[in-house]
Length: 147
Image (cartoon, rainbow, N blue to C red; front, top):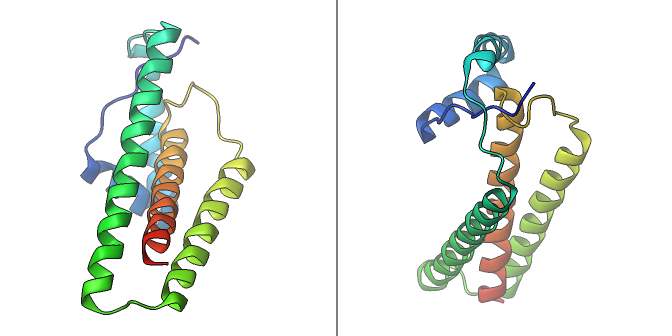
């Protein structure tokens, strides 16, 4: 099967699917089965490799930039509002590191790959991984600015 174009989903729809996967896995499986039935009729993906590489680097730059900016704002807000001590910064660093390790180990442990990251299960895997990685990075940046 050729690589297919995934259906674009809103952030609300992504959050709904993550919620279903965590709390109602059977309903998520129904959604995924319905989505998989439409794979054959979707258009093939544009596989110009250089475009994939360029967009991946741009998206990852924006991803990291938002984590750094939000981490910096989190540090500044916590300095002004309530906390200006070293143990809090160390705690943020530990929690951020733990989240990054958790996300990394989870993705390495999940062997989810069948249709070029188009199925809902594969996309859910990516969404959760990216969110955990963003959260861990943001906490580490906040810890750096607090420490």
